[in-house]
Image 1 (tube, rainbow, N blue to C red):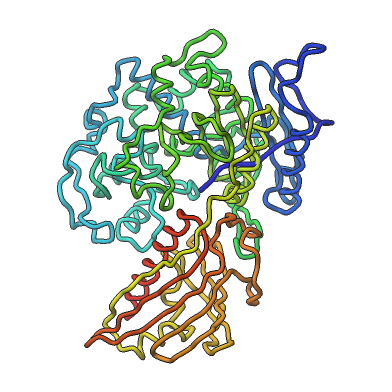
Image 2 (image 1 turned 45 degrees about the horizontal axis):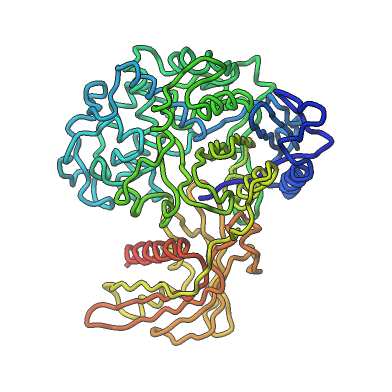
Length: 586
């Protein structure tokens, strides 16, 4: 899960707040801006997104530009005031609201949430994340307001729909993750259903994404005595002049809205996720502080300026300097970061504040740590950099653009290059290592039965793919010199084809193959062409050995591959999931 990409052409630059005086050196380098716009236009031409708008601000100078259209078909040109689903970029708005209530002395960061969220009192905690939701132990302590803010309450997004706790979440329509489809419940109804579930971890134990923001929306409403949308409007949107920001797009503004797209990874083709007249065209039952806001470049710029100015905007103070400092520093202990994140190693060089990611070490964007911000799953990105005074925003409505992390990184590198900041000398790709990933499991099956699980298409389709991916299709030709093609499909309908080319086959004993991504016909493809990062595992050679041991068969998978340490850890996790899922078929 990575960062950025963006920018502009000299002939169409729009200078917003101020034009530099005659003879004054421009803040932004025109050649760098032109290069950045060229990269965005190339991404649009490739089909990663239909269009985008972006903004760079430093001091009084603001540069805005647009490219492409609002839709692949039937859209209109992107505009500066086009309205976007900003998704998780809006999380910081919710945490800012909580800090206001802390300053109002209506909340304390270290108080239990039970006073205002009694549904969360006396929590039970799963003994095993994979176990039944009734197998629990009491929580070791109450959930604190701070736990909701830094996502350590013990409940969060999972990526395995087969887990009993995830199935319970889905059965209750809590939508703890992607906002489409929306939950039908009011905040009080949602809380009542959420209270039926145990926590996944002990409070304060580890970072888990998203749920804290959903609960914060309810907490804000109850602490303030008014609906979440009213509190945000009165304390944040109106003082900052954020006239187009809210939880839905009124009918008179729908002409400035646009569809949202997701992507089929195998074909790199976009499909419609949410139309203009979809769930954001009317007030929601449950206003989500996790990802329910819509906004524009200029609206969010006002909020970003307030934070960069340490709580003040155009002479009006909305937050204290201390509150902004608390929001934008890493709030996680090493123990809370260990094993947390979207994949192994996510927090090795990053931190999490209150609704924002913190960049705590030099990286390929900037050698000076300290910037903060976050991305949204529909292709929105924001960062503030106190060291340089740079604010950057890029908005599109394509999940593909969000996932194509190298492009996001290009956007932010281009932004820092445009202000003359040093971005060279740090590799675009993490250091790659060549290593073996090994996983062993024992199964209640004969070697012949285990062999069929690897070599017959009907058997492979039962288990292949790290959870929650499944395999609806496999074409097996297991002989030396032959190859198999296996389709993996995610719950959202994203497809990936794996190609296995066999180099050694000893029936019931040993299977050796090299693997790569392919198209549906089995032809190898470049992983980066379907949005995979540059460090996607390469030169993967796999060995499967089957060893009879009494009444069981010991199966060992060894992957010899070149990739980054982070992706190596992720490969280890993926192989463990493959073996666990295969074991369920015996």
